[in-house]
Image 1 (cartoon, helix red, strand yellow):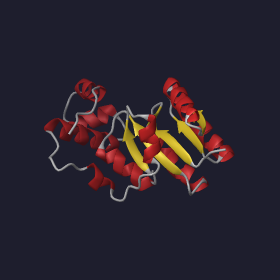
Image 2 (cartoon, helix red, strand yellow):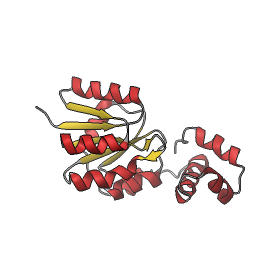
Image 3 (spheres, one colour):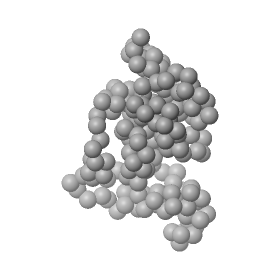
Image 4 (tube, helix red, strand yellow):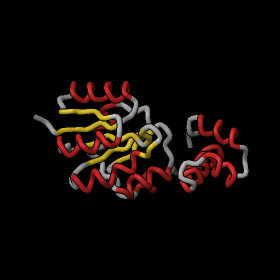
Length: 177
């Protein structure tokens, strides 16, 4: 039997599709949709790898990184997110995640990420070209939102913008570099 891999993602359809794709590649894959179940399955299955969604039904998936690594120190964690930002990527790597990928992502890219070593996360993410104004705005909003623990109203006040304007900006996909 091959190494076990645990998929932790609250999107049940995405979770099931990814687990099935991993099984077709010969991996012993299991899926969980909430943090409590994920920790109990990880303790029982002792996976070698974890694919972890950044947002688990309003809870940060990053809150699982330390407990998972404390229980299984050799564990390799790849964090997936639909809303990638440099700030959350750096946080994920600092907490002990092995890699950080933006959705949509191919299964082969996820599997390759488990073998890639990230030595300096910020260096890997910085392009030779400067970031666009739109991307800089997105990064700034994400940083301020994180500083206010995800509170939209407090973040809007700090950014001196209307709450609904901020909500519209957050609903859009992040701007590419």
